[in-house]
Image (cartoon, rainbow over all chains, first blue to last red):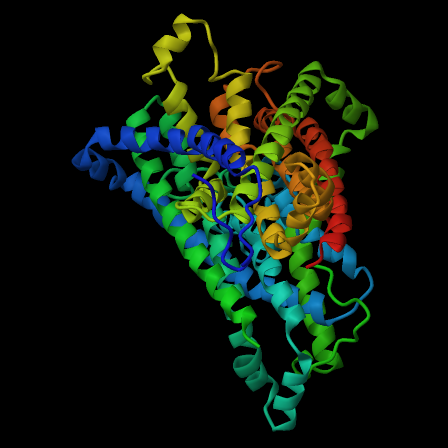
Length: 282
Length: 279
């Protein structure tokens, strides 16, 4: 079987290397990604539905799931608002050090999560640089649920900025000027002109940040304090089960997490397709 | 990433002087609290016991072994995932075939899978309780709680980076230049080396930089398969955790500062290459 050319290229001459490249790719993806994930799914299937439901509906799992969802959602929301603000400032305004600030946005992608975890804990602990003033104001950040939200905001920070930035760069400022000359207020310009254009990218970035936050482990475990029922996130609970050699328990929770990852991946792909259609429009 | 640099900020939505000043200050405050202050804290805490303490932490044999293992892991993961990423991008961006979209989704999957789940699947596959486990121990093959497991987990989490960067770039470029080279009598490999590779080199380098950063820094997945044996299966990010949990904070931050310096190099490389790749 040979590959057919993409329909956008009408000439029918076929490039070489189809079988070799596809062979390498399917073998690698099959062995490294599909086989291990299939092993997890099979193991979960062996546990049986009733046992599976019993495991994941225990009080501790439900508390962890509630915290993971709530904190990931809060972090994604903070990143949607603040990420949009950062992207806006980086695209529209000029200030000294802007290229350095722009480069720093990617820090959470480059920094190992254990380093981020201990750094955030040091800063937000009651004696830390930011934790001390917060504590004086009566807010304890580290070792509470707020600490979990802070860590998850950190890991998701680049997603919204990097999704929204190119769309803002392509926006024609004259459209805003036209709206202003027709008497639109600044709030109206934002809601009626800017927001519709950036909405698909904003949702894509926020969903990516949410997906990343939901599975995050390294940066959370130091700042959260890891109290069962209070500050324990789902990935940490999987590790706790494994450390007690409770493979079925770990597998049951992980299988649900995997199904969620699939669902989020599908959502992200459809959001990205929507963004591309928006960008293609004149 | 690099927008039109000289264009003055215009557009009625941009607001007046006061609004600009306030929005810029708010954005910098947010980035300061979440990125810059924690980053600065790493270096300040690393030097909490002075330069001597810092040096002792770095020169410690366990730290050295952890750094060596991290470099080894990156040296394995980067070439393998670069080559496979190139093959995947070639198959996906140059041909249409049944199951293509499914293949793209599977390549992307490690991005959304939790690192903990990524580590767990290898425990289930190679652990003592698995179908393979007894056979492996009979033949004296150690994968779990040994270096091969660490490399496998790292390969899993870093597998999408190169393909993800290359596929859109190659799709946009089309195949006309490659067809012309082939029509002029070049072989397939010649076409790839002389035509394709020069066109994608910056996007490729960009993907490799990201892949390398993640290979150096992966924590969750590696933590589950490693077993945390000091001097043997302990990577630098894991060593940070061990030192921290022993309340050896200055040493933990000293090792962390080495990793943070590597992250800063990554950011610099990314900014330089990003300007060439374009937005």
